[in-house]
Structures are given as C-alpha cells and as structure tokens.
Image (cartoon, rainbow over all chains, first blue to last red; front, side, top):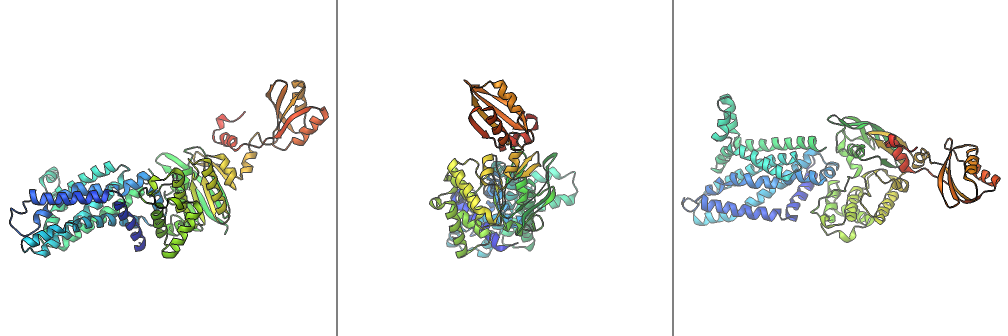
Length: 246
Length: 318
C-alpha cells in the first residue's frame, strides 16, 4: 500500500467532482434539504432547546438518497468508459485504487458537513449548546456517511449502469438503517434464533448513529462503522476483480 | 536486452468459452509484433492478460523478467498500454490527465513537467492541452491515449488498434511515431488493417479462435499466398489457346489462369508450381515465341488473402 499513489488517485477523483456540476448540485441540495428538514420537520425553534438533534436526526434519511447518488459513479463510470482498464494496468494495487476513490468521496461528504456550519453558528447565537455533543454528532454523521459510501462503492462495482448502482445501494442503505425496525425484524422473527435477530438489529445504522449523536462516542460504535467500511471496501475490491472482464 | 515480453501457454476461459487457447510467444527489443485476426479471435483478451488487466486461467506473462501476476507493480511500471478505443477521463484536460498518469507512475516536479512536455511534443497535443478530453476529436483523443502510454518511456509498449478510426493522415502520423520508437522498445500492436503490418511491423502473428495460426515476418506470411511469385502478362495478336499451352510448358510453372480479354489483348497468370520465382523462365518463353507483350509483372502475395485463407479455411481461394 503506497500512500503517495492513494493520494494521486484521491486528488484526481476529488477534482472530478468539481470539474463537473456534481459538486455544486450535491452541496446545494444537501444544504437546502438538511436546513429544510431541521427547521420544518424537526421543529428546531419549537423545541426550544439549544442543540442540533433535529438537524442530525434527519441525516440518515438524507443520506439514503444523496450518498448512493454520490457513490454510484465511483466504479460504474470507470467500467462504462473503459478507464478501469487504464487505471488497473498502471502500477497501482487494487486496494490503493479502491481506497483512493473512496476517500475522495468521503472527504467530499465531509466538506458538505463542514458547510452546514451556519447551523452550528445559529444554535450558538440562540443559546448555549454543548459543543462537545455537536462535535460528536458531526463525527457520527461523517462515519455514517462513510458506511453508506462504502456500500455504494460496492454496489457501483457490481454494474456498468449508474442507475442500477444507485437504486441497489439506496435499497441496501435503507435496509441497514431499518434493520433495527419491525419492518426488517418481523421478516426474520419466527424462524431465526433470537441471537441472530439481535445481531441483525445491532447492524442498524440508526442505533449506532443515535448513540453517537447524543454525545456518547462509544468505542463500539466507532468499531462498528470502521469495520463496516472496511468490509464493504474489501467486497468492492473482490467484485471489481471478478467483474472486470465484462 | 533480449526477450522483453515472454508469454507461456496463455489461456483464458469465460465460463464454457475458451477465448485464448494456449498462446505462447516472446518479443525482443526492436521488434514490432503485429497481432492479426478476425474480430473475436482473442487479440484483445490476450493483450488484456499481457498487461495484467485480466487474470489468465493458465499460463504466465513476463515483462522484462517480472511476472505480471507475481510482481504486478514492477511489471506494470515497465509497460505502456493503449487500450482499445483509447479510454481517458473525459472530464479532464489532457494537461491534468497526463499529470495524473505521470504522478501515478511516480514522477514529480521538474521531471514530471519535462516528461509531459516531451511527450506532448512527440504526439502534437500542444494546441488542445487545456480543453476537456470529451470535446476533442477522435484523432486528438487517440493521441492523448498514446501520450499516456509512452509518458514513462516504457521498454514494452502494447497498443490495441492504435490507428482504428483515424483518417489516413493521422494513421500515417501514428505509424511514423511507432516506427520512431521501435528501435529500443518491444512493441505489440493489434490491427485489422493489413497494410499497417507492412508499414510498421517487423513480425506478424495471425490469431484465430484463440490460437496462434502463424508467426513470421510480413514477407514470410505473404509467401504463403498461392499468388506469391505468380507472373501476370498481357499480350496481343496471338491465338489464346497457343499461349495457354505454351505457358503451361514453361519449366517450373503450375496452373495457368486465363484472366479474360479486352479486344485482342489477352491476360494470363502463370502460377509457380512450388512458390519459386519463375519470371526468368516465363520471359524466356516469351522471347522464344516472339510474342508482343504489353504488360508483365510478378505478383506478390497479398496479406489479406493469406489472412482469409488461414482464418476461414472453408472460403479459401481456389
């Protein structure tokens, strides 16, 4: 694993967001929607509390739509345009390519999160929030975005079609959010042992994210998101290797 | 340097289909190997395995002594590759794209700038360096592809249909470039265009159904043509039956073909019995009979005829 080459791939990928309208469209939509959700659906003012919980609460749902849209092009486009053949016949390893591209997308979502700073400024003007909790919320949200992106990266490696990549990764991401909910659990309960059921529900993004966004940066939640990312990136590399002949 | 590309028993299966079936060859420095074959013969698949993009089902590929599977980074560092259709990141400019390729290959700073400048001058890209690649013409896109392949001055250069879709001037330009680089590299290129083999290749290999059918210099391939060394002549004012009979008696001559006539100008073609040169014998025959010959020329084998004969035996020439 060569950090220099990861950096080169990372920079090219990140620059490609800004060379096309993707960056501006994504950032504007993300900021608009996260603002709208916070103030209208989240009742930011009505709650009368100086925190950003209504802001963070909507992130998982926002990500279900927006992150697959960001991730869908990661590999599908490389395969469609044939540049994957160029990239993988250069002296780079599969791991460097997968990580470089993922990190670019992840940093881009980080940038989108940073640009929500007016929210943080507002809440600090209006009251005296616990900024530690808010920071934890940002960290948790960014980790969750990474998890979604890793899933999206893997689904993007599955197909040449960005549309299919988008739809499939949105569904898989939704399943990961809802895995603690009856919708998913009812499907498994009755015929799977209780232990498996609790494992499935422990996979839920929501439970892990909510505990972080309440300000509890538990090591278990960190490990959960990091291992999730590692797992899906690993799967990405294997899928690309399997499917590159097509 | 000797053999820079060594390929042993290369095989690729896609499910039940055998795309490449036991291909072995090697390429030395200074050689330009032309890969010929019908569409779907396994040319591109072979190239994709040689460059390390596809993993072979069996067999080994060595680039400058480095196994592409065991030691991919070392092998790929010595390899320049122009994939079919010259793919590139369409939203980048050639300047940014070549910088990216150079950095991936480990060049930085002044060294990187120097290499980009040299390469851009070689392939004449200077005028479009700051337009996005998607807005460029086919010829310029191909040059961008070539530029990324030769940026690191690789000892081994592999090109999948480098002149496909270019106009005659651009083809000529790309071929001149290949010839100029050929001396200190080992080059493999695939093509459909048989004249290209003559123009740039020192060696030609015909592949069909995943197997190497023939391997030799373009001249050697031509010699496999039944037309090779045949003598075609046109003459006037004589009885065609007599000529036909007299030509059949020429020492070393095989079949005599009547090519028809325009007015009293008759055309014949005399095939050699064993591919040897028979022009001396034919001209002696003409002199002895005192014929008025209007045209006389020796045929060279046509590569495309050999190609058809070898790749579609059922439709071979009679």
